[in-house]
Length: 252
Image 1 (cartoon, one colour):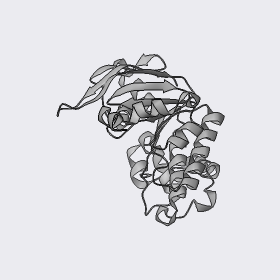
Image 2 (image 1 turned 90 degrees about the horizontal axis):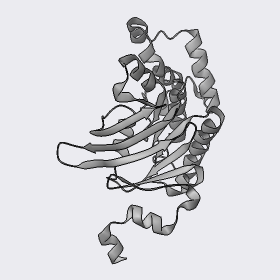
Image 3 (image 1 turned 60 degrees about the horizontal axis):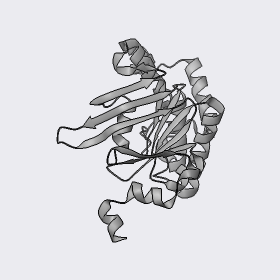
Image 4 (image 1 turned 120 degrees about the horizontal axis):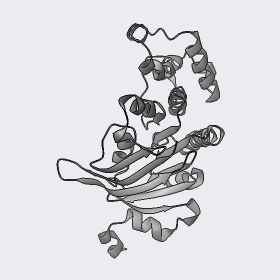
């Protein structure tokens, strides 16, 4: 699914301008990292893409259609096609891996099956398939609280895959993990991108991972896009422009 942002702006009630005329296009199947200092607008951008915030200005298009002009049914279909992976996993600690993955089905279930956790054999088989894909089949009946951080993130990825996403929003997916485990998680996401042609948009403070795994990097600063290019085009001058304030650059 192609994502197009056209002159996106977002200002909060306290006067903070989180995004200012943000414009870019992400073709289907691209792995894009969004980098920048804290307060650059990365989180707001992700919240707009997953529907948790609405832009104050501009338009967000999915496959050429403005989400603001879509019917309620079409908007729900777009939301169903977006999976999200979080830094803190967002899993139910006392539930099993399998039960957590199956929660991805809840929005598509009727009231009573959802309340009583009646998922059916087909959904359970599919959940086990995705747990196998992320290397957690043997942990399917293990409570999440007993898993390592890397295993929890794998379970979260399996849950996202249950939605058959066209887009994966990865919000600092390796931030809570050690470097080796983080690299393993990013390798898994890269495999998913390449095998399934899933568009991956990653919010990251880890420059090494962004440069190693991304097809493209977008740099945000003060709500503006200040860099949009390939990892090979990134250099020290560009990084200084993204991360250093005017005062910092004068001091260095």
